[in-house]
Length: 370
Ligand SMILES: NC(=O)c1ccc[n+]([C@@H]2O[C@H](COP(=O)([O-])OP(=O)(O)OC[C@H]3O[C@@H](n4cnc5c(N)ncnc54)[C@H](O)[C@@H]3O)[C@@H](O)[C@H]2O)c1
Ligand SMILES: O=C(O)C(=O)C[C@@H](O)[C@H](O)[C@H](O)COP(=O)(O)O
Ligand SMILES: [Zn+2]
Image (tube, rainbow, N blue to C red; front, side, top):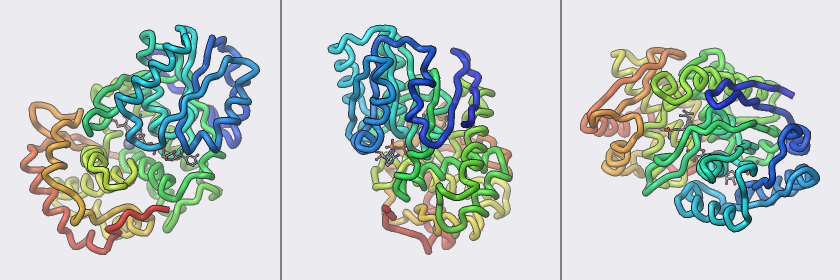
């Protein structure tokens, strides 16, 4: 078993990573005496792993389960309110705990519930997606509002992260790809070796059974750890974790059928394009990189599906904005991120030129589900 301890203002917490770890949850939680435990999961994960977790915990705790409709739309005010009502009706008290069993959607919503119910109760992350190697670490919890991503939320670190990597084996290709995009992001912002390792190990497809997969996953979690420990509340440096997200979140809000990670991947291509323009030479958005993204099945050509005016409208609500200017995370080179601010008019112009780049013409236009 791997253990990474994250230092956080409200208390350090361990991230345990192991194949089959869901069966050991009771042992991991030995020191806790929760009055009630609510497992919040979604309608796909419930059929796969809920029973195992209930069985693992039922001798020690009074266990309840709440199953969300799978998908991003559950990160909503409506689901938030439904869960709070459920907890109140079941007499959950201050000594109770919430366990998020699922991907980033269950984690972000359950964490926000835990952070606000009775002004905060214990929260445990039990991630089941590759994406959640990112979302379960760092304490960002949130829901969406009127199409704006994560606009209502908190920094609320979990007490523990229990990452059963066996669960990754049931993910679809598309969901693996989504989490892989955040690993690529971690490579770009902090670690050339990680990025090169990802390119070399997975030239055509992502294989969670590959001998190097776990090592690369751990490296990615360590980068997340270093960044969130350096600036837990995102006063400055943590913003680098938003590389690819400024455009990515606006694309995601258009609900074109792409996952969070696919939208972030597309946003990274745009951020690399802007980075090249800033540097006045073309070393970042290379044909090799675009072809790799294309082979993995990331969207690289959205020229016929993206509504640019809507993108600009959404980007105006980005949390990194200041004084009406849009702050993008760019890179000087792999591992050297910085912030550059633009007006919405400038971004609209650059987006138009980006969308018509010949380099991006050969790509997937349709969503590549599978
Ligand atoms: N808080 C953060 O720091 C942070 C970081 C990254 C992403 N996020 C958020 O996370 C969300 C995306 O997370 P996600 O990609 O995990 O989405 P998700 O939670 O919707 O999971 C993706 C899909 O995979 C299914 N699934 C989950 N585990 C499975 C398994 N083991 N086997 C088979 N199917 C499984 C789910 O039912 C869902 O359909 C977005 O809302 C994003 O904004 C938050
Ligand atoms: O942990 C962070 O900080 C991140 O930015 C990680 C992102 O991958 C994640 O998608 C996060 O939810 C985005 O945060 P937001 O503050 O832009 O909503
Ligand atoms: Zn993300």
